[in-house]
Length: 328
Image (cartoon, rainbow, N blue to C red; front, side, top):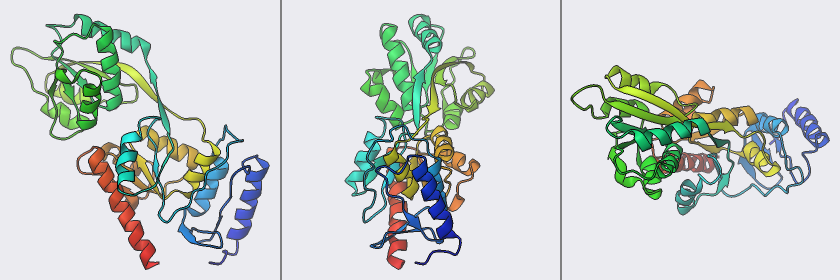
């Protein structure tokens, strides 16, 4: 490949800028052609082109002394962007299919102590008054079980679980026996449409949720006549920086997995890239990618949210990339 007339000069300036900013230690800055392919004298990899280098300069790095790991293989690594410790199951499934992965957590959870206290109160004294507690994510389920144990682990609550991941979180934390309903599709809108409506007055629902969750669930339930009390029990915030190894991985990435709109916004903020293949856990994240300007043809999601469908989507993208590489 040849350097574009202006591309080589711009890349050299950006690499020099990165070095001046102190990012060069332990990091190999890739040269890229105008076609967006890395040039290292040995092999050619598909790459994010100038956008990738921009993310390298733009990323804020805390651990400047960290040594960047090599980020080249016969197939591109899949980036896992859920919060720390929440990528293990997807990683196991992907690596079981022979794919290299790289963990790059983009969000972290915080507890809302006032909301947690309100939920403990409802669990301890809501018998005969609350008809349903609804959990719409694995993290919401974890917070629910924490509060449930603080309330003495009562057996009376009925819990609606949105899907397999949330059900698994409830079961792993001892509250699986409380589950009384799971919708036909793991989305908040479908849960709101299908939650059983009890005769004899408007049922009361307690909805422990993220501070950033949309109003779809309570709006949908309210339109059917449910009385809904939403309690924000936790928050989600983007990470503020990336290590040198993570910056390098983000710059070279082709395939990125997204489990929430928050992770998508954090990725765009930290890297500036919207050209990657985006493998989303479900429709909500898929829509968030499109709203944030990601290339529509490169956004994928399963028809039913969940780990298995998510893994299948990544496999589909990796097969596509392998086919393109073979043609090249």
